[in-house]
Length: 495
Image (cartoon, rainbow, N blue to C red; front, side, top):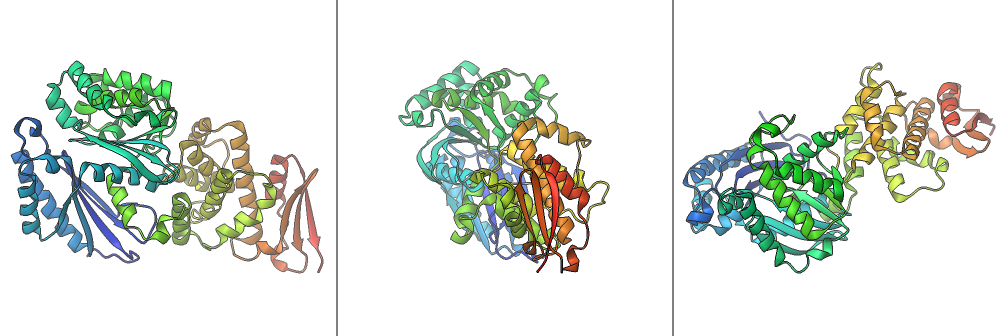
């Protein structure tokens, strides 16, 4: 029997798209939209819409089955808040209203058909859910439409929706590349605000572009296969988009991890993104795995959750579930702060994340603890984290568990970091190791000690009268001191 123990506020979101219908169930009690359940059915409702003006009859039959199943699953999962959203195909089809009315009656639900503006804004909110500081233009490609919307200072701005979805454009162009490019450029030419994205970021959203990210990762030999926040500088992005647009099926089938269902549409998806990129002129291309569904989740969140930092929120949640003493993370952050008298807000955020995660792998086998910590953090469903930041957090926690350079994946991920970032990660990791050695991970003990760099010494003061500090933390302390270029000095404080 399915239960929702520890799930306080589940929400189900069914996205009726032009190509697929997907159900995601999330927990609104937490800031991060990690799906409790995720299933997709490919129905191709929008196939043939351009020519007939109506929904694909075979797709309608498949959609009845898919939506019926998804609604039944939500009821079985005790989901009492179910949002069903329909997008471009249903919005534009002459029989879309009849299709919606039939589903509502059949399943006993309400379905909301999004306008183009609502679809664009919801995609932008999805990107902002993952990256609150996103700045530039969000491009969301579906089967029936392409939405563009600006994002700045935590909010969506100017937006447009165009009939340039993969299914619709392929049919309108007769699968002719030159004709497709002409149609894309004709629509883009009529958008007066596209120049606002110049020199900023272009965020690519949608399943077809996630597949394109896999292609780009394979072509560049990027050491991390995580799709979210995979970023390319403008010149590299344009080269790879042009390469992908010219690929044949045989070449794409050689790409590891690339969905076979995505291969036929990938060259056209690359062409669309390449033309959008040239029209806007951004400095970087950033792939996002968060879009319309996550935008709806974000809009539903209580304000107290929405304002949380998504990275620290998920780290804190993991600490609450897996650490021996969850409150210890914040104490660690404050205890080692004297080692970093000058640090940016960004550096402090990564250090805080590492402190929160520093004890969640305590029950792994000691021989593999550092490696397991490194690999899991490198691949965790973090939000709002660039790949170099993800590598820095993973390296930090590996060093907390005395991880050395003998971990093969560690050497790869270090390619994402500059020399100063590697050194900082090691310092934070070794400070965490020293802290856990001193306190055993228990809360409130570190407050009785003091750690400060006073060159040429790294000074550790402990109360002489407290037997909890009777050990000599020689190895952990000495290693941290050497990394800082100091000599370790242990002071047992009287009184």
